[in-house]
Length: 153
Image (tube, rainbow, N blue to C red; front, side, top):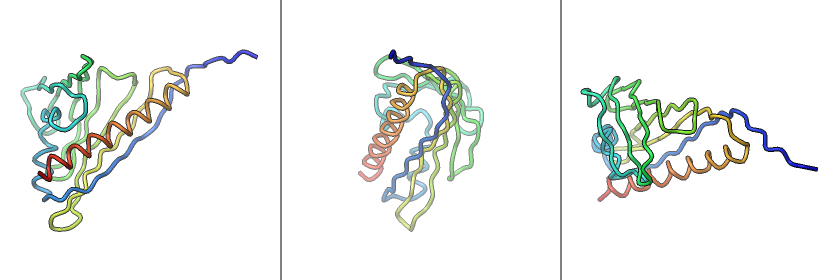
Protein backbone atom coordinates (compact mmCIF):
# COMPACT_ATOMS: atom_id res chain seq x y z
CA UNK A 1 0.00 0.00 0.00
CA UNK A 2 1.47 3.34 -1.00
CA UNK A 3 0.86 6.39 1.10
CA UNK A 4 -0.26 9.46 -0.80
CA UNK A 5 0.46 12.86 0.64
CA UNK A 6 -2.58 14.83 -0.40
CA UNK A 7 -2.18 18.56 -0.16
CA UNK A 8 -5.07 20.69 0.94
CA UNK A 9 -5.99 24.06 2.49
CA UNK A 10 -6.18 24.23 6.28
CA UNK A 11 -7.44 26.76 8.80
CA UNK A 12 -6.47 27.20 12.44
CA UNK A 13 -5.93 29.71 15.22
CA UNK A 14 -3.16 30.23 17.74
CA UNK A 15 -3.62 32.17 20.97
CA UNK A 16 -0.98 32.78 23.65
CA UNK A 17 -1.11 35.08 26.69
CA UNK A 18 1.33 36.17 29.34
CA UNK A 19 1.01 38.28 32.48
CA UNK A 20 3.63 40.98 32.96
CA UNK A 21 4.29 42.92 36.14
CA UNK A 22 4.13 46.38 34.58
CA UNK A 23 1.49 49.05 34.03
CA UNK A 24 -0.84 48.95 31.05
CA UNK A 25 0.82 52.16 29.79
CA UNK A 26 4.30 50.62 29.78
CA UNK A 27 3.07 47.45 28.06
CA UNK A 28 1.17 49.45 25.42
CA UNK A 29 4.14 51.74 24.75
CA UNK A 30 6.25 48.69 23.90
CA UNK A 31 3.79 46.67 21.82
CA UNK A 32 2.36 49.66 19.93
CA UNK A 33 5.81 50.49 18.55
CA UNK A 34 5.17 48.34 15.50
CA UNK A 35 8.80 48.46 14.32
CA UNK A 36 10.23 47.62 17.76
CA UNK A 37 10.05 43.86 17.11
CA UNK A 38 13.80 43.09 17.01
CA UNK A 39 14.00 43.71 20.76
CA UNK A 40 11.53 40.93 21.64
CA UNK A 41 10.25 38.83 18.71
CA UNK A 42 12.49 35.82 18.08
CA UNK A 43 14.62 35.74 14.94
CA UNK A 44 13.58 39.24 13.82
CA UNK A 45 16.66 41.06 12.50
CA UNK A 46 14.98 44.36 11.60
CA UNK A 47 11.61 45.97 11.08
CA UNK A 48 11.03 49.04 8.94
CA UNK A 49 8.06 51.23 8.04
CA UNK A 50 6.71 50.94 4.49
CA UNK A 51 4.22 53.76 5.13
CA UNK A 52 4.43 57.37 6.28
CA UNK A 53 1.94 56.42 8.98
CA UNK A 54 3.66 55.07 12.11
CA UNK A 55 0.66 54.11 14.24
CA UNK A 56 -2.98 53.23 13.81
CA UNK A 57 -4.88 51.83 10.80
CA UNK A 58 -2.88 52.15 7.61
CA UNK A 59 0.59 51.73 9.13
CA UNK A 60 2.63 49.18 7.17
CA UNK A 61 5.79 47.38 8.26
CA UNK A 62 8.30 45.04 6.69
CA UNK A 63 9.84 42.45 8.97
CA UNK A 64 13.19 40.90 8.07
CA UNK A 65 14.11 37.66 9.82
CA UNK A 66 17.59 36.34 10.60
CA UNK A 67 17.27 33.81 7.74
CA UNK A 68 16.57 36.61 5.23
CA UNK A 69 12.82 35.96 4.85
CA UNK A 70 10.60 39.03 4.89
CA UNK A 71 6.94 39.59 5.74
CA UNK A 72 4.83 42.64 4.92
CA UNK A 73 2.12 43.51 7.45
CA UNK A 74 -0.65 46.13 7.43
CA UNK A 75 -2.40 47.46 10.55
CA UNK A 76 -6.15 47.10 9.95
CA UNK A 77 -7.61 47.89 13.40
CA UNK A 78 -6.33 49.96 16.32
CA UNK A 79 -7.85 50.85 19.66
CA UNK A 80 -5.45 52.97 21.68
CA UNK A 81 -4.28 51.30 24.92
CA UNK A 82 -6.24 48.11 24.09
CA UNK A 83 -5.25 46.32 20.89
CA UNK A 84 -4.14 46.44 17.30
CA UNK A 85 -4.83 43.99 14.50
CA UNK A 86 -2.71 43.40 11.43
CA UNK A 87 -2.72 41.24 8.33
CA UNK A 88 0.25 39.72 6.53
CA UNK A 89 0.06 40.42 2.82
CA UNK A 90 3.30 38.77 1.71
CA UNK A 91 5.96 36.37 2.94
CA UNK A 92 4.09 33.52 4.68
CA UNK A 93 3.04 30.06 3.37
CA UNK A 94 -0.53 31.21 3.89
CA UNK A 95 -3.49 32.50 1.91
CA UNK A 96 -4.70 34.49 4.93
CA UNK A 97 -3.16 35.64 8.21
CA UNK A 98 -4.75 38.08 10.63
CA UNK A 99 -3.43 38.65 14.14
CA UNK A 100 -4.28 40.80 17.15
CA UNK A 101 -2.07 41.83 20.05
CA UNK A 102 -4.14 43.05 22.97
CA UNK A 103 -3.60 44.13 26.55
CA UNK A 104 -5.86 43.95 29.57
CA UNK A 105 -5.28 45.17 33.11
CA UNK A 106 -5.27 42.35 35.67
CA UNK A 107 -4.59 44.66 38.63
CA UNK A 108 -2.66 47.88 39.35
CA UNK A 109 0.74 46.54 38.25
CA UNK A 110 -0.13 43.45 36.24
CA UNK A 111 -1.10 43.49 32.59
CA UNK A 112 -2.08 40.53 30.45
CA UNK A 113 -0.76 40.58 26.89
CA UNK A 114 -2.47 38.28 24.37
CA UNK A 115 -1.27 37.49 20.85
CA UNK A 116 -3.73 35.58 18.73
CA UNK A 117 -4.09 34.81 15.06
CA UNK A 118 -6.25 33.13 12.47
CA UNK A 119 -4.69 31.70 9.35
CA UNK A 120 -5.53 29.72 6.23
CA UNK A 121 -2.73 27.80 4.53
CA UNK A 122 -1.61 27.50 0.99
CA UNK A 123 -1.82 23.87 -0.17
CA UNK A 124 0.19 21.64 2.16
CA UNK A 125 0.04 18.20 3.72
CA UNK A 126 -1.66 17.62 7.07
CA UNK A 127 1.78 16.98 8.56
CA UNK A 128 3.22 20.23 7.16
CA UNK A 129 0.27 22.20 8.54
CA UNK A 130 0.46 20.54 11.97
CA UNK A 131 4.16 21.46 12.12
CA UNK A 132 3.38 25.05 11.08
CA UNK A 133 0.73 25.45 13.81
CA UNK A 134 3.15 24.03 16.39
CA UNK A 135 5.87 26.42 15.17
CA UNK A 136 3.51 29.43 15.46
CA UNK A 137 2.57 28.50 19.03
CA UNK A 138 6.22 28.24 20.06
CA UNK A 139 7.06 31.45 18.17
CA UNK A 140 4.36 33.43 20.04
CA UNK A 141 5.18 31.85 23.41
CA UNK A 142 8.93 32.48 23.19
CA UNK A 143 8.45 36.02 21.90
CA UNK A 144 6.00 36.85 24.72
CA UNK A 145 8.47 35.49 27.29
CA UNK A 146 11.15 37.75 25.78
CA UNK A 147 8.72 40.68 25.99
CA UNK A 148 7.99 39.92 29.66
CA UNK A 149 11.74 39.85 30.48
CA UNK A 150 12.29 43.12 28.64
CA UNK A 151 9.36 44.91 30.25
CA UNK A 152 10.11 43.72 33.78
CA UNK A 153 13.79 44.80 33.72
